[in-house]
Length: 515
Image (cartoon, rainbow, N blue to C red; front, side, top):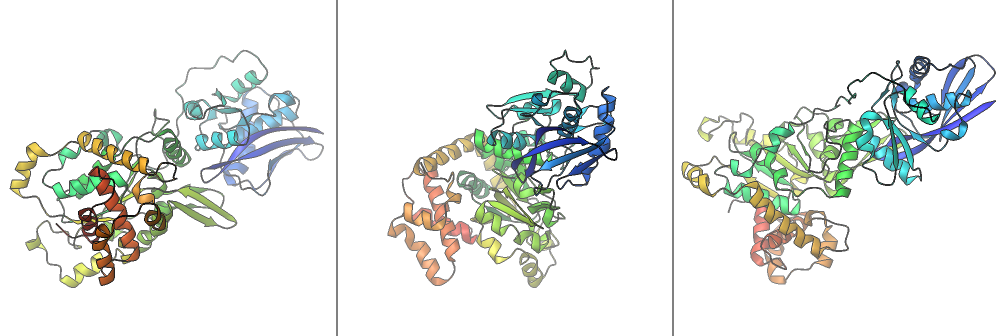
């Protein structure tokens, strides 16, 4: 009996688990048998692998061949195991030396002609392989740059099974026709980055208070709710929040890139996402699309994970199903989402800044005089956004259409994104210095008990919040959130601790009062 082994990686969320791919050729009825919890796409590897091997001028073993994927209890999904299965079979058949593939980790889907096609999730798969102690990985040529983002690993990028076999046999590479490198088709439409890249906060005219709220949100990572009639600038403001955020550091960029790699939404030519992402699902999106979901074998990240370390914008918030909105509550607190399926629990990071925008009534009249909605209709419409969800939003602002005087004033005085982003960076640097040695990176991430214990404020500054708490107009959660916002206001003002006017302004922002 001939037995060969190589390795591949199975993804569970953003975590890669090493999989042993073993092939045994024995006497019995000829055929290829896959064991080890393969899904439908993986079960179809029988035909892909056989055709690819024969198209690569190799002999297919006409004997009983068993391929085992271990550990057997770990679900395996997708076609990324094709290359490992093909190499293991050829090694078991004696076409390759057993030692040349035993320590390699192989990723890639095989075409019937032997080409190796790109697969999603290469970055987290390589990270998982390195964490398991592997130092050499084989990836499709189209995934080479993505795999090379991982340090301390040797990447062998090949375009065909024939080329990989020549490399393993130490033979000259085959002469292959020059063909364009195949790319993954995004599973989710990628936003128009070129359009967003030209956005500037100075484009928003006549909404000085809203621009100030956007700066506070960017400086502390605070969630924001904008209420106002159509045309007052809600969407313009939301789209410009990423232009105020600092670039992602290396660790954060790898986290974001790994999520988009799994989802198949990495932009062509940009294997590393180093800018905060912006994701805006349509109000008809399902709960699974927003939170994440799928079968027990393949769980994919949703919008809240695609917006990790960036901005999640939910326009026309009352139009979303109430279940979708309320499903945001737990991830907003924990910074991650746990998706449970039969026998499988998958976690995705979801540390996002939420911006919700809403019209004051369902008719969405541009002017108050044109609205025919009754007060009860307006109340019922906005009540679709539940109280517990609003309780978790730090800044609430009601916008009104800009006046002619405001537009004329902002023509010369509206600050650019570059100017505001510099202040945001200074405020974040002050917060990082204060939280040195702690696991949090912004004021909005600090748990309430830790905030009060580690960073106490003066009794004078606490007085406005304590009065509101005693009156019942402020919840305990709301007090924690107002305190976080007060710290951000102090950071923007270069103060070592929040002043009474910082907590008073933070309380107004949480309540949604206009100053």
